[in-house]
Image (tube, rainbow, N blue to C red; front, side, top):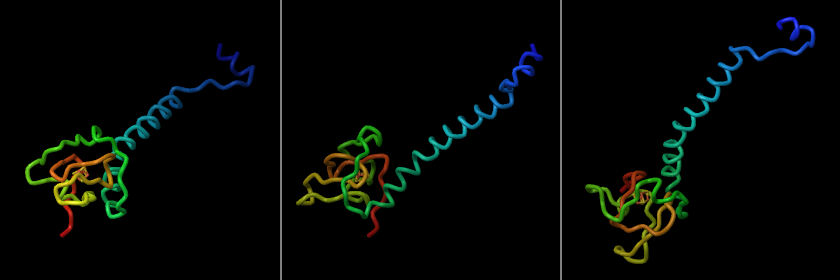
Length: 111
Ligand code: SF4
């Protein structure tokens, strides 16, 4: 059998090659998990761009109520509506958000 591979000139993938591929895939998957929070943070960092975001509310556990003293109105990503109590937008999350809302991407607005 070994001679067959030698005679045809074909090489068989070795176990170490498979292991290398597996480790490579695991590394890519791990990078994906690490990159996800980084992606959110980079979106928070760009909060001053003032353009409504596109992250689904569900992805950041958006709720229409505050979490403690954290609200959209004191988050750096909040784009206020026409009045203080009106719904506004967010530079991260898609759609309208309440000034009293909250999500897991909350980041304190600089004063
Ligand atoms: S708390 Fe979440 S939804 Fe509200 S403004 Fe901040 S990032 Fe946007």
